[in-house]
Image 1 (cartoon, rainbow, N blue to C red):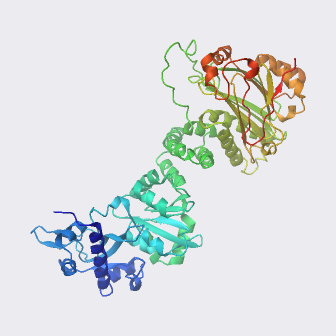
Image 2 (image 1 turned 135 degrees about the horizontal axis):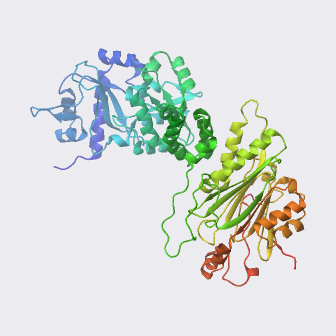
Image 3 (image 1 turned 30 degrees about the horizontal axis):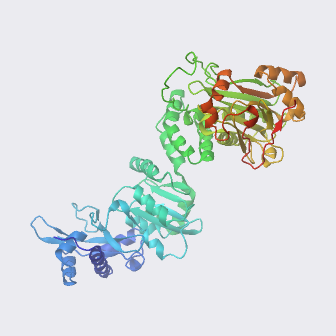
Length: 612
């Protein structure tokens, strides 16, 4: 037998909806149920919801639609009638309040959810239309199509469990605007539901998930987050009192319900974090570490989309678990995965040395030599973090804006956080993480202002023609030199010079080739003449450059000096490496190969030939 046309199935549902609406005003059990759920019964059968009532009769709808010209095959395919155990055709819905399910794009009725009001012990509370050629539960949300009837866009979306909750909660307001209340149709939230919501709702609109406070509600929160994690706006949760659902809040009064939503809504990520922490004894060190292990994947997932929010959560978590913030950051931003096995000779002559402090490098694995200088009495800090298995290194230099204790502490914290995270998130994002950590620490009473300038460098990926990246905020100076060129990496006229780790522009620059000799110095050394800096960089090994700096400023010199190792220099001079450089012409001469050093903030770094 041929399948009925979709238009016939939709028409049958439209006629069924009118039939149900006609029976609602005189159905006392249905009226009592609607009133108990905070729904205005006198207008429930009117647009936009057009609720109805399915009579107790076994065949009332069947006979009505037969008389309207529909065949039994069409009604069976539409899911409006079914075959009984005795072989008779009977109505699917009997003695139920009927909630029409509409398509979002044209508001056509394609299904129903029926809520039992018979009080018969064996009757399921809710019954939903089965899958049909025009309807799948996983594709549609009750309440989404009804948004088209509103003149004002919703101030928030409230995701609830059932259709009665959706109708009742649609009477609420949030942040001075109406609420768009939606519910799945007898199924858990799906990716298709989220896609439909994202299509219908403007980006930036908060989405609030209303959940029961019991264990099932908490499990539902985890499942909801898995689908909603990419929602293009604030993602929040509304924990409900035990034994209460959104409709019951409305029954107690709209004003009280609005006040409850405004007071108790909170970020879903924060809610899930606290729920996971409650499963552990965080007053003990083993429990705190177990809790951190449980929460870290959630924070890492958040960090992939919102670095600032994740950093704030990391800082809050460290305070709650009484752990060092760096311990939390290392759990959330773990060491990058080991690269795939290499073919050919090993990249270095021996295995990495196991050390308790992973930022102390195995220099046989490092691709860059470096030396650092930071007098202990200076309000500054220099840090290096190295991954022996990848050979990559990150360096950070932070210098307090003043010599105050708060600025000293800010410099140490910023350098440590940035150096430990730069190889995972990049130097720019590492400064953002350091910014969040410093701002969070120094908002506490009695901690002082706490401010510093900062620069962060990362060595290139494994490819010899990679680039060195540097990000900075504040008056930190960096320079690079090659065999025939010299250039500043941080310019003097962009907003990053007047910013700091506490706020303002974070600038970033990249330089190729990676065999450049680099010097980073603090703002206390900004008065050095350019000729002096060029002399310091001129052909010396890193430690020799630092010794030269001590001759210039024995008490205040703060610096990091970097150059590629001899093995890395050799690797970068092979024809293949030179050919693969995106900014280099075919091998000719040193003079023909120039570094790329253009800050993303818009200020070009100026190259200058070395003196003869």
